[in-house]
Length: 370
Ligand code: ACO
Image (cartoon, rainbow, N blue to C red; front, side):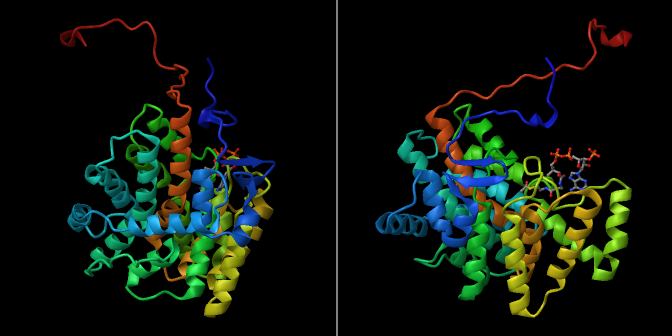
């Protein structure tokens, strides 16, 4: 038995939710470019869960269900009040998602219908949790969800209590479309492994949130903004990047396990970063990002991934940095739950093997003689 480090190239599941073939990402067979330019996030959620784009009435029903489910059980808001204000929001989200199960009467109901209800609740309540904690840590009362608003609009509304700018809503909605699913990425795999033991969907999504948090996965978007701020100005880029590469340190927002010729989502976020920067009269982060991209691609052949330009997009939208990865979770919840539902449909426990490289032929020695 020989291990493949990082499971690179291993095909560990079949899926009809999304695919990456020759650098092209599709959700249920629809090219991400097509969806990014035309679909709303709610249409994508429907597509991922039910396998086809919704009719008018199907979309209206899903939106109504999401809106009706957006309020979080009061005890979950109460536990958010107990957390230290400086806790990373992803750590808060991991615990809060787990706690949602305690107040859901269908938590242990493994019927397909109940699992769909839970997917709707998770999708609707994750934004509410993130917005509520953000307000609580600043000493403000949480804002109740706005009835009938889209997930993007409602999230921005719940952060401030003020109706958001439609340009910001549109930008966030597109970012949600772009992050919704991505084949067998680390967090989705974590979620599938968990539910493949026939554990519940809350356990699966809790595992997925924990995996997304890491800087090699979803946490990279926050790390990119840290890097941009650390560099400080366009004149310092050259020294900073060359220094990092000389020290063989990772540059956040670059590289990808699957895409070697470039991440198809990055160009959409780059365009958004430019347009938002132009409209707000602040192209600093965009200009710096473009220069960094040119240098890193030239020196190392690495291309930006989805996290690179999302950092400047969210910053320009005025979103606090430690909400970047939670926003990724709002979006990816749709993909996680679609994969979890798919796993339940055709389940087999996921239990690979390991190549043992430890000591052999050890004999027990009583503790007095060690
Ligand atoms: N900066 C510098 N060098 C890099 C980077 C990077 N961002 N990414 C890859 N490399 C180099 C590695 O050092 C390695 O070089 P070597 O062969 O000379 O040792 C080579 O490219 C291969 O890289 P691996 O780390 O082995 O690639 P892997 O497929 O295991 O990792 C990953 C992929 C985790 C995305 C990696 O590129 C990385 O750490 N990127 C930075 C973090 C990041 O942006 N993560 C978000 C990914 S997208 C997402 O999850 C949403």
